Length: 438
Image (cartoon, rainbow, N blue to C red; front, side, top):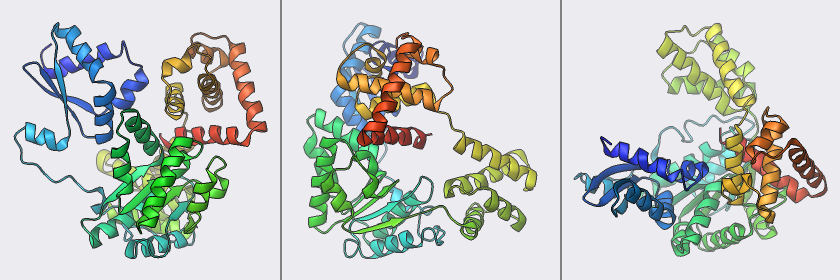
């Protein structure tokens, strides 16, 4: 081994013998080796949540791997960004604030009939938090600007109050963080983070539905913030009335303030979005080309902006002209990526594992505990419905089960979905989670 990087690669190989690939990909993706000094291995993890989780659950695995490699005991220390700068002899620097970004502001948000209410409500909340619309819940399909509005609200509040404690989290990350810290006996740390916020922003809050402990925690967090006059802003893919697994207590609270929907933009709004994005990128886009994009790309804002980005990339990197041929090529790439996305079986398995908090080996294996059986059957159903894999090939993924077992599992899921609306909602949420991550 010629470097600490080689050592870390060897450690990861050792870990793959005891931990699943899903665990490695989920928890070790932001972990890098810094140095080995004496008998101490220094690692860096910028993600505070993952750092704490690794320290609680996986330090022993890392130490064991180092012992196997060097035949001696090692201490392992995880450094956050500030500790890394100190370790490297650099003066501590202030962490960059995502809410001061000039990209996601009200000034760069294009307003049209499809999002006018959500935009106006967001501006009102930003200027006068917790006075009129608390909570504010913005709902609509993916890619229509909900996250942009969350960041725009935070941008204004940060400008008006530089010391405001702003917390942003995605719904599925809230779940994972809660589970991780509670298991590690650090529940008070979790509660302090969220219940002391001046502004709580939760993206895709629909993911907390159906998880009793998480909903209970969110309920108490909501009450604490609301009663102390702090602003809560949520986004979801549907209104609370359609979240069939949502606790009634939470549904009532989500509807206390204002519900504002966002819909796909009309042609005039799409055209304005295209021109605005081109201007932000410093690109002169001929009117004919802007109109062409606005006419053809209709699903959401993300696709529109992605097409403009692609056109600019072709122009800058390949020297292509900004003509109809280039735009057609860019639109084809974007629409294919967005509309014909086929997840890998591994991506589906990883999502089901996260949802049920099970190791991949349990879902693939033979265990008959209820959650494992349910998760296994749903995974088979989703792989069959979302990929091109045959039942035989799906069976091979699950410890070489035969195709009749796969067929039985799929039939069981389909039957239960027809009889049990709550179960159907679970499958729908899993599907949404998978497609939203590509």
